[in-house]
Image 1: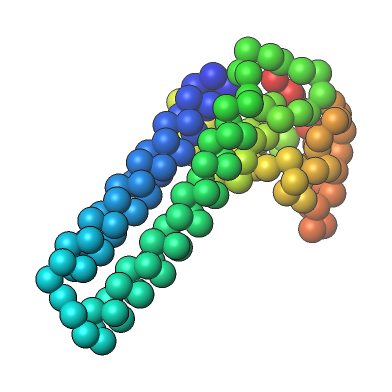
Image 2 (image 1 turned 45 degrees about the vertical axis):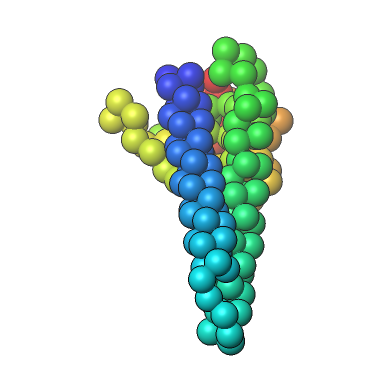
Length: 147
């Protein structure tokens, strides 16, 4: 199951990268085409707006590339006894994939939450094994399995 989850998230992140790259490329093309046929203040404003939008998209692209780098470090064939990057943890009946903060997914009827090791829950679980209990915001989470 862990391999499926990892592959799903890798594809999700790659799809996002492709979308952002396409959007940035489209803005670049628009700016070049606009530069050929326009002049004046409206033209400068339009170019400035396109440039700002391109900077925002570049920032989002960098965030998604960072998520991809984290996912690329994970070896789904390793099953540590303690929670580490790439662990699939069952706690309180929930499945937690320790990787990057990504949207929850449902695979084979199981809902999986991808959390980062730096998140409040992730940081408490890191380095601990089955039976460990952590409290976050007044709720207790007990590790039932680690793979």
